[in-house]
Image (cartoon, rainbow, N blue to C red; front, side, top):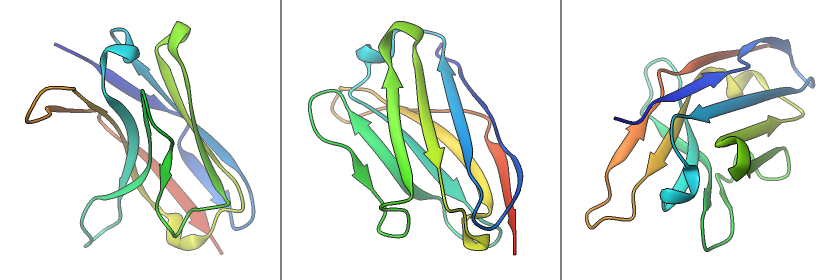
Length: 118
C-alpha cells in the first residue's frame, strides 16, 4: 500500500506564496507521473500540475507562470510552489501518484486545505 502525505497548506492573503509538500511511502520514480490536483467547494477535482518521469511538466492554464511543480527523488517528495496566490486558488489540494500500468492506477493523499483571502 502506498501512502501520500501532504503538508504545507494554510491561510494566505492574495499575492502571497505557499509551498506544498507530498511525501510518498515508496520510491516516487516507480510511478509514471506525480501530480497535484485541487477541489474547490461545489466543483470537480481538477489537475493543477503534474510531472511525469520521462516528459515535461504540465500546468493548468489558470496557474501557469505562478505555480511550479518539482520533485526530489532522493526524498520521495513532490513539491508545489505557489506564488501570487489568488482567492480562486482556494481549494483542498491533493497529491496524486499514477502508475505506469495500463490502465494506470491512481493513489491519492488525504488533501491539504489552501485558503486565500482577498
